[in-house]
Amino acid sequence: MIQIFKRNKRRNITSFQVIIISFLGLILAGSLLLMLPISSRQGEFTSFPDALFTATSATCVTGLIVKDTATYWSVFGQIVILSLIQIGGMGVITIGLAVMRVSGMKIGLWHRSTMQSSISAPHVGGMVRFTGFILKMSLIVEAIGAALLFPVFCMDFGVVKGLWLSVFHSISAFCNAGFDLMGVRGQFSSLTSYGGNSYLCSVIMLLIVAGGIGFMVWNDIKTHKFRLKKYTLQSKIVLLTSLLLIVLPAIFFFINEFPGLPLHERITGSLFQSVTTRTAGFNSLDLTKMNESGISVMVILMLIGGSPGSTAGGMKTVTFAVLFLSAITVFRRKKDVQCFKRRISEDTVRSAGVVFFMYLVLFFASGIIISRAENLPMLTCLFETGSAIGTVGLTLGITTKLSMLSKVILMMLMFFGRVGGLTLIYAALPSSGSDKSRQPLENISIG
Image (cartoon, rainbow, N blue to C red; front, side, top):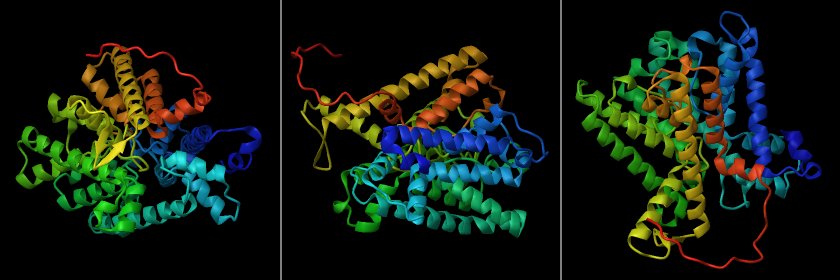
């Protein structure tokens, strides 16, 4: 990746192409490592398709798995998976820029521009400083998370294994990956054995939210503290939208799901499913026991995902908010999309519409193909494709049973969801430059 950085001018590689190549290179390297006998508990070679699926899921911080992480992979294999999660969560370009900085290499404007594209930053200024902030914040939050989780895991598994479980789950939760090591209590069980532990679930939820609101928002919080009026428009939208997308679905789940649980477990379970559905991938309750309305709400939340410049995937909270505000603008017959006394540009509104369209088409088309290929219920397949393209990792238990065709589709969706649809389009299509002329205007009927 650093060689790509160094030779970019001679090869005329765009920032978007570097992002894609970096993620693909990391996935391939992770796949090769996971194939080695040292990566499995039985000391046997892992097939390339299974290793590739696992590496793709880890790098794209998704959490869909075909092999139980705790019982199939050795400690070395788990370390490889955790490394892929960490690099994929913070961003391959972020890690590359940090390595360049530490090694004393010159960081030019092109490198800063690539970093800007990688984290969807509004401007290129301060990218080197911001890279340091991302690394420091990630390590500090993950360390705090591990310390908070340690008492629970230490009591259940002992000091050494408890420490490893604490570190693994803290990083996995902050990076919104959803990988877990609870298979020792039941393969593919996620955190269901701790569904009644409100303390552990609360720590996991806080880590998920911390990673999912985005580093730019945290930079605003660090700079302006509680002076909310000084926050950027994006930070205000992210915080408000994230709050609503946690509280409102939690109320819905509390009313419609989990009727047999004690009150405190029902409250914790409702909040946990609301938080984890937007790209984290852990589950503290058996999702197969939920009714279709609850599953449908979870699919919507998975598609929305986290926020720009975060460890989360999905079409992003800001995209959802802009589309909602655009609809309100049309309903009220206003000219400009506005929020918090600021006007949102037409380019932003158009980009939001394009992202939504791409996600919707890929989500439905993939669900239809998998449903036909596997002869499975459509809602179950849409849950799987929504989980993949939203880089969530939740499943209704069909991932390990899918054919190679369906697994390839899921890998492509995971990659699309992590890298971003616009990044892929911009990398594939050359810039057409500015329009020197405009065609005649003619109105058409809508609705």
